Image 1 (cartoon, rainbow, N blue to C red):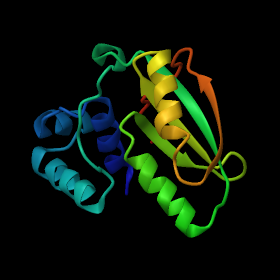
Image 2: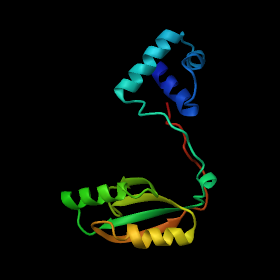
Image 3: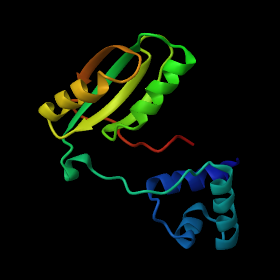
Length: 150
């Protein structure tokens, strides 16, 4: 990957709806080489897809929490069962496995505190292998959806 590929990625992270012609103009390439590079980036997996970024408040998800998960056991079967189960919970927007304690960090969206409490009690606390959950509420997003650095 060279500097031009990185510039293409930066521009697309800022506006994924650019046409190839607009993208080519921004990175100072003609359309054919820009299109070729774009297809290569897609084929190689540097670009995993295109999607709309939806404002959670616009769809009624005004409440967000970070949930720290400590596992009872960390054997392969338990980890696999937990990860499969947590991936099936639609309100879990992100799930990251961590080094050290806690074992996982979940970013969870809900309509309000009551909905979060129900999700916590009925789904999150019952995930396979969970020993302890610890939550903190998000006050505001200071940096959100920033493009990756070049």
